[in-house]
Length: 53
Image 1: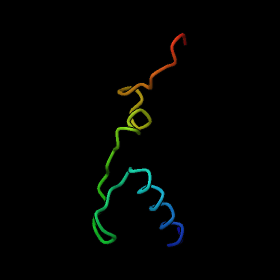
Image 2: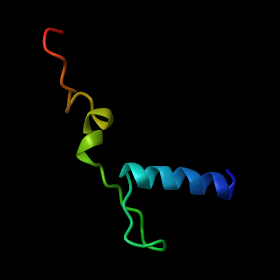
Image 3: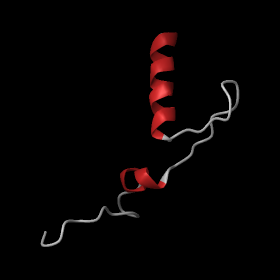
């Protein structure tokens, strides 16, 4: 993977809130935002279904 590709992927992951960093040189802890819980663990957090479905 080229450094440019890695930077673009990292930027996208940071924007989605999956990783969190307080500065450009800080560690990148996993954030697990609530908005992505159903995608991360579908059996634990089933998405709400439309009524009548």
